[in-house]
Image (tube, rainbow, N blue to C red; front, side):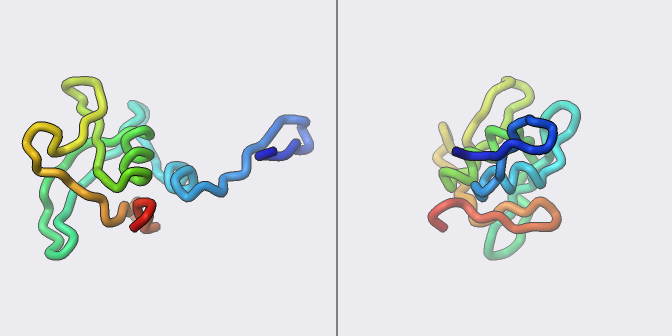
Length: 104
């Protein structure tokens, strides 16, 4: 059974999942968002600035295809859904640690 009971009698959760570890290290704003800068992996060219929430980060790391939060539409979106210009995740950096998509 995940977790254990601490001194206070409350159940605590052990974070062994790399995606949950990555999410725990990201400082999301009071609106639940964090800015995300997409860069071309081989040249470092900045492609765009977008926003991510917890679920966007989780999906990006789990699927290897970048997912963002659209503030204007108030929903998740994946780049390339209509244009075909898909962004694949090579790595996610939170300023300190590098996190890789599963299977990469």
